[in-house]
View 1: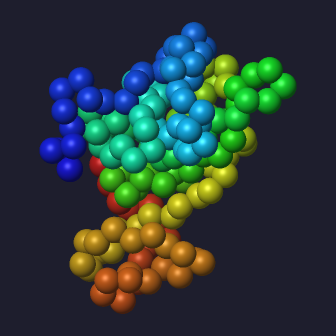
View 2: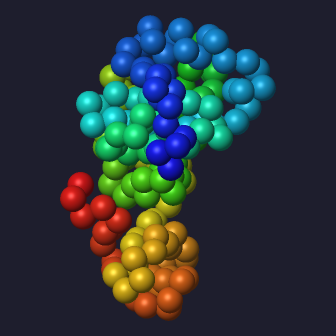
Length: 158
């Protein structure tokens, strides 16, 4: 994963409405049809990169408060967040990381949903240590069949 992190290759930091306006103004119509990769760094700043970017590269290899995919819509003469998820297999953020995303979006004055529009539930298997996406509340490891914990445990140091 570190090979994807090149010096200066991180996502574009968006810390103000002016930063967002400048960044979104440089996007092509084709780019705007797909979601973008995002992270919220430990400094609370939103970073954006093209969709197929690795989250770890977007964060320049640093720890994050949240990560996922985000799309934007232009309506009523302003940009808003259309969809936002915590879909990041690089960081496997908990759904509770929404508060960091909300804070970052509020700081750049973007209208947003009340929570992730798609929540992904990640768990690390205590037996085989593999990361799992929990589907339909089935807390069973797809790799070894062990029970997965109900509480998020991907990175216990966070």
